Image 1 (cartoon, rainbow, N blue to C red):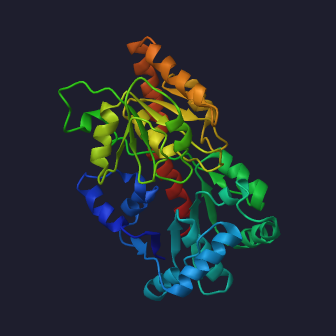
Image 2: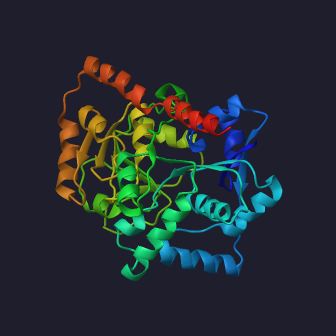
Length: 358
């Protein structure tokens, strides 16, 4: 039986760059180990969005209905090319929901491993009208029962799926590629000491309104594709094309700020792990979606602040600036941090789910 990682357009190009050492393995969501163990039957398949009018209309309707896109036509094309009986491995909700629908209809006869990210966000934010919410939650539950291994990346996300949709899931701690996210891998190290605060992230659960309402002594750089609100702040918005460039930006930053909306999705997880792996301290919003709040609360390199609290954010930055560094303690903490943020355990866990379905 084939094992196909169904993902969005552009991932094959990224994979080629990964093989050249130009990108981390993070974007494969654990599938790197599957490719290594099963090279003859495992492969990456891009699911290309179908932008014809009828498909845009379907996506608009499902957005109103349950807050999700529904790539039915695009997934159907994959089945036409690859057959209907394989292990489908994905971390894209719109792809997984289409697979579940086709499995219920008997048009897909394989197995589904899905890493869910944000299925309950629309319900938590009350984006779905009450008239639709009850029915759409029942509909999503019926679809998700077709998933053979439903995985989430945070404890809060697991609780939300159970609370809102009545679905059980498995919490698997995510990790990042430590062989890439390392200060030793930075090629262009500036000879001039830079001093700036850094914020990174382009998902819709970032709270840049709170960040830009705060006042800091150090300059602020923001790496995002999102449009930023005008608060009259002195900040620099940066758009990076390759992860090596982002790695260098992390390396020269003082501290990384991650301001978030309070959702159960573990938003900011990759950014926090990348920064910690690079030896940077992180100041981030305490949300329902923190993947491991106990670990984050314990380490010296992370300060958690309450949502929408501008003064707490400003005070956290001042606290970090005034802290006296203890090199021995910091080194001991880094060893513990690297154990918790590395990708290997995540890959091993996901591989075990694949093996169980073969």
